[in-house]
Length: 228
Image 1: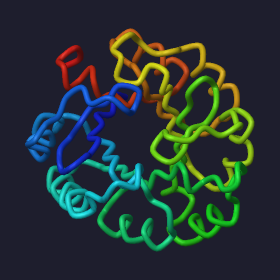
Image 2: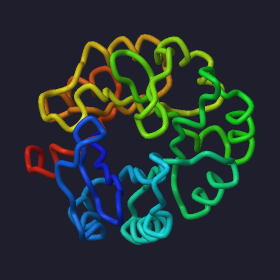
Image 3: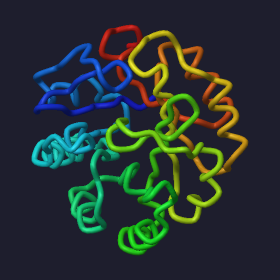
């Protein structure tokens, strides 16, 4: 399944290259719900919150409400650092809460936080983001790199989450294609559902991911019309 992504920055939907360089921006964020209305599920990510540069919370909440009216399911992530914040967003109707940086503390899995999170909103609503560059996990809006590799920590994280969102940041926004072999290695690390992201640009890649039972979260290829 292909999952459209709405990444928010300064009240707009944006697409960044490697999570840093702005490539394009869409002012009419709600218009994207009409554009993506044929898809049953979307990802909404607050990049400002992830980078600690502000928040698009009101916009996220309104998107959740608008998507619900269209019978679209929403997963929300970006800067979710407390259990209370996660519970509040779950209350807005988010199907799953995506946590990334908060899943780690002092270079290790933050088991205390994840246990409290799963206890509060239920493990089935927790999705852990493992955003990776050069094989290492990135946190704080992809600004800091840990020494950890996804395959090292996935066994520890399985007990707290129902799914994983794995982004190959090396190819994010480049439209050069993704690293299917990397995703295959992650598939061997867990039986939990995985959504792949990062550089996905073709139906062939989406079909290849489907063969290993992975969904594909797509941004740039949809926004530029490479994929309809």
